[in-house]
Image (cartoon, rainbow, N blue to C red; front, side, top):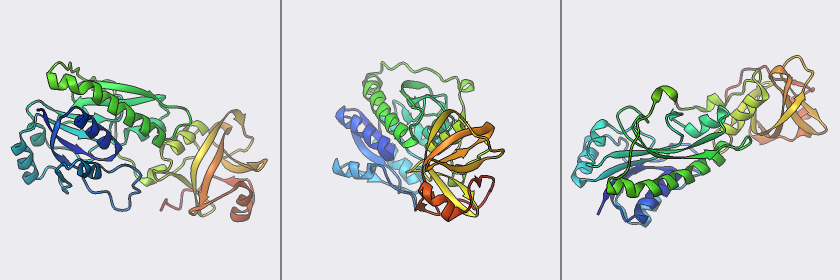
Length: 314
């Protein structure tokens, strides 16, 4: 029987572990990690899924600790799989499985190597992303590709909606690739890293809106960090406005000289760069839902300038 040690987390971890079990892969150990303090947990628990299947599970602070490396080595796995594991695995771990170590990444590699690839793809206005199963090497997301599956990104889809598509793509990729990995017929192809890009992690502060950018660019940021992620925000007359959902207004332009918020027919709009207009469908002021008819009462005379740089998002 094929044996695989799984390092994983999140929905992708759960769906891919289920693929292994459907293919009767023996999983002698699941390695996950504790949820981040203060993080809103909107996704499935790999630890809970492993417990339901009575699989040995650990959540070490450091997955590269010598004692865990020794335990994995003693299990003599054929494969090591990383399914949305948030921590880098050492080369010492990657050398243990006799038939290779493989990672499921949430982009069409070599594009969007690195952290939070789905969010970055939406923020940058991509129309396509996907899931890639690739060989793990010491350099992150740089190993040979086993298989990948593309998914479309709609112009108004949020990162959460795209992430759910990518999760389904990850399951399909593993479902069709696993038999070929097991029987040795998988044909791996090298990545052309020069044709891709690498992105780092994002912080809540990175959701600050620059209204001097085009409406399209702001719209992409809003949907790329929309809940359950921290959200896009800006300062308005000393208070924090969190923008949760927007709609593009193709062909419409404004007459103001600088970026402003304004109300038209009891609907809220923002004028951005080059006079481009964005409708604000859902927003919060200092954590409370804000309706168009409340702007003037709570924030003062309209239109409202959008040039402040503080306060910070808290």
